[in-house]
Length: 284
Image (tube, rainbow, N blue to C red; front, side, top):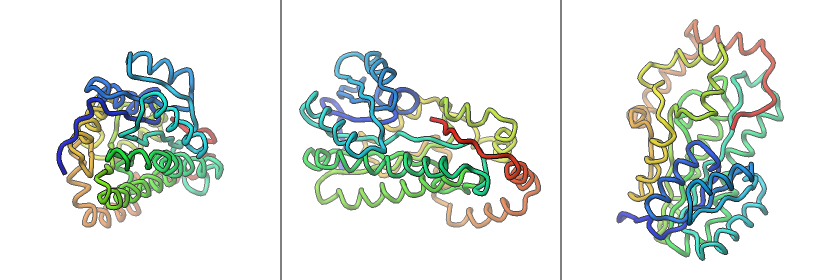
């Protein structure tokens, strides 16, 4: 597949009021694209779009609302005449908890936003993506292939999003369009900062090898996505050090699963998490 210039293209990015979404929108805008920022907080999204300047609009919408996402795509086309790129980035994460103790409503909300919200965003945009031989980017995570202990619904959704993106790429090829799956490690967003603020979460983070815990900035993650779009890359992995794990997951995961079961430190953290009641409010 040839390279793809984003200049004069129109991109829609969800979860774009801050973090990776806003950083990606900024990189695309700087490269000449018009951008439609979408987030749940209407005022924050409009303000974020104003920060980018001309060729940017902000729209408040809930990605779990199918009709709302169809309206958003219509607004994008009304504003800029077309839609070429959609990045389904909106996502939430729970605090660490076991499946037994996590509030069921929170568990299901994570699935609704991170999995069905991605589908509803992409499905609404597909007619324009196909017509313009454009691109889809779905945001998975390294949690698509690492053990999801204490973050089961988050890991479930990211594995599902990976499969969704891979299937899309195969299905869109006939139309001259493409899909990319973005896998992020630890990015220094508000969601990650808040998620690892508790003593339990810090203990859990400490069980990861140090070189895998190093965080990238949202700007670095956004650049990786923009570069991946211009390369029509099937996979966008940031930080790149996670690429080796991704390639070797079939060999490494059985060993690491066994470590999760048998490591005294990890099981001590799991026991402590299994006592505490699960949170009822997700992090965004």
